[in-house]
Length: 251
Ligand code: ZN
Image 1: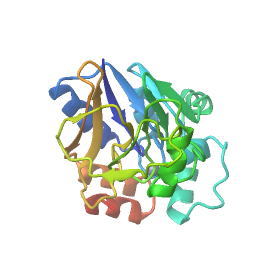
Image 2: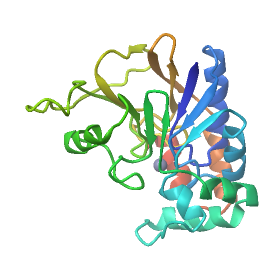
Image 3: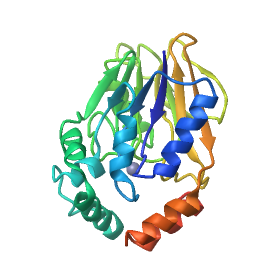
């Protein structure tokens, strides 16, 4: 079984299509594991939701997804996020709304737990340092966990018997190197595949990962997409200019 791991699609249809095409060319996939923020910021919310539902799907929600269906307040959103949440809400089909309303905050797929932020705060906490990683590892009921939210790719690992050891191991962050096969051994891991529709690691190419359960390997890839077309659609929708601009900068 091969799972295509997608985070932070952000209604970017060109990025999502490019990723799916690239993943097919690199051996294909049997299911999509989607780590939330499928909507928000981008111009194609309905189409992106339809596409991910064409495959066997494991999906979790995040603040932009819930904000779009009124399940989360947007008071703490910045101007661009709030404007895009309001615009997205006005665009959503009935099918999209009912899909989003039923999304769980966490899901388990095989040996992986899927969550957008962290297990202690699935909607809004960023897993970016040893403290948040350590708290997350303590709460993991599976050996591996997949997160999104920061739009920054990484691998974080810790000893398997993390909870049992009286002396707690410190989680270590590693670079999730592009195109390199990473073997899942007897440690515990947290992966962030990077962002599909709004990468923020100063590389504008879409970032995603594929897990192969037979080989027990996970790989991260990057793919170029038609950024100019997405930007044109963002401007035509009247969404904030900043949302178009940041795509060319990978920020
Ligand atoms: Zn996001």
